[in-house]
Image (cartoon, rainbow over all chains, first blue to last red; front, side, top):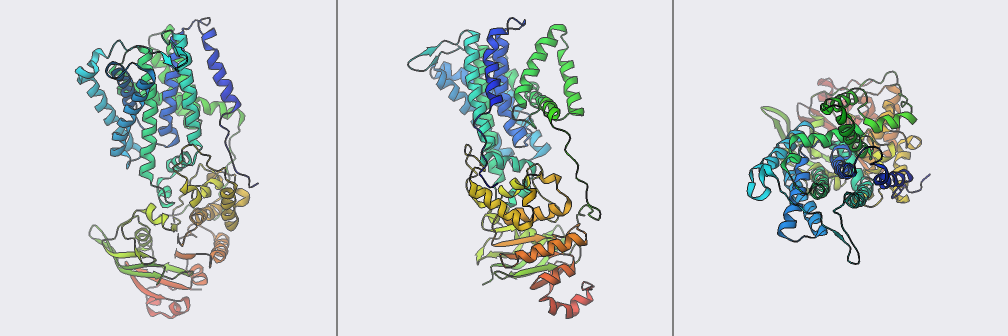
Amino acid sequence: MLAGRTVPTFTLPMLAAWLLFASVPFWIERVGLYQYLGVEILIWATYALAYNLVLGHSGLPSFGHGAFFGLGAYAFGLAQFNLAANLWLCLTVAALAAAAGGTLVALFISHRRGIYYALMTIAFGQVFWFIAIKAHGITGGEDGLLKIARLPADFGVVAFDLKHNVALYYFVLAVFVIVSLLLWRLTHSPFGRVLKAIKQNETRARFVGYDVWAYKAAALVVSAGLSGLAGGLFAMAQASAFPDVMSLHYSGYVVMMTLVGGGLVSFWGPVIGAVAFFLARDVIGALTTAWMLWFGLLFVALVLFKPEGIAGLLQGADKAEPKRVPRPAGAPQPQPR
Amino acid sequence: MPLFEARNLHLRFGDRVVLEDVSLAFEQGRLSGIMGPNGAGKTTCFNVLTGRYKPDRGKVLLEGRDITGRSPQAIARLGVARSFQIMSLFDEFTVFENVAIALPGLRARARDPFGQAYADPALVAEAYAVLEMVGLADRAEDLAKSLPYGARRALEIAVALAAKPKLLFLDEPTAGLGSDGRAQLAELVARLKGTATIVIIEHDMQFLFSLAEEISVIHWGQVIARGTPDELKANPWVKASNLGQLR
């Protein structure tokens, strides 16, 4: 009974999911879709996983995460133009720039929680978005930062050209696998469990001896850094960087993906959400330009009837409602004095 | 030297004086009690002693060391743990994890982002030892939110106990419990007696008089009487302020 408890580094369903993703380029065109969609889905799935570190795992409602994704995208392009056209360097700069942005924001908001935290993230998100539009000399303003090259993945002995969407897809898949392994590990580490404890009860976590402020700040910095990495990949995929990914609009998309997919109850919820979001966009979008209306209605329905999202639906299928333990007679609610 | 000492604490909220010249001392290994009517300032006093509020004046000393105004987490790390009158658990965690997250062994590794949180059998055994002590070992894998009320009160204490505290503050541990629950809890506290220095805020006189070795009575933010249960039974102040309704 008293053996240590370990969580496997990866599980069979994870392996199965990765294999499924790896098979996508072989059939995606046959089902009437296109290779670039796979790239987009995996980048946003990576982004949503990183985002869920704050929303789902730490209970920090960040509604301005697009700022970090965008910072990564711009940093990738600017590093490529001004430092060196090396993929590893540019991706590192993308992640570090976003982590630096995350640090700056974390310094100002980590003592907040709930709605105040949310409002401050929106405000900061808008600041970054506005700067991206106005700093024309650096970001290209609304015209965007163009002609960002898809740099080759150079491993010294062998280099892969990523100009083709299928090659880029496999590169993005590799990054996705690494990021998801890191985050999986992190959420089961002592650090990750403390975040989860803080999510449930900040006061108690503090009285148990944890520096809640530092943990909340660290969660945002790590999440921002990984979001920036995804942003760097996005700049490479699009061969450009635009301010729109930093807008409140786009920040809302990642929140929707995470919630629709079930990030609050499942580690993989954000991935499910990203897949659902893009399939909805392309499949419903093929039928009507008002696809967002239908996706929005789906979102509303989920929030109303199944706040645990799609992952919650899947979990609900094999798990019955937990039994309610009746409150014993003569045990009233404690009265605050 | 007492293990923990409060010297001349003053605290005001706006123009309302909540603590006025409160001095308390808790000896090593003792079980002390704080009692007083609703709104007397008992919980506020705990909140000052454990770092939630900073006193306007006065000092808080742990083992002679000045810890006035330190943060709750800093005071907790020095070995002062507390439970809450209004239940404060990690509801989505299992009973096991509620305790495990509070163990000093986990806290020491809490910055590790890649290690396994509960892989160490010694840590698991430690958590179970605490659960054993409060009688929750067989419910270790249940979610905290699924426990019945009395068991939640016991878990509330277990989370504080997990820190292996030098000093354990229990804020109205019997709040909301029926007579059976109170009896069980009294039993639990009696078992803990001697293993740690304990300070209990309590409303229930009978509960406190049967357990505590020394009791301080707080009224209107002041300590109006102090002594052993026997001394206090005879204390005119206690009788006069209508506190001593002993059966």
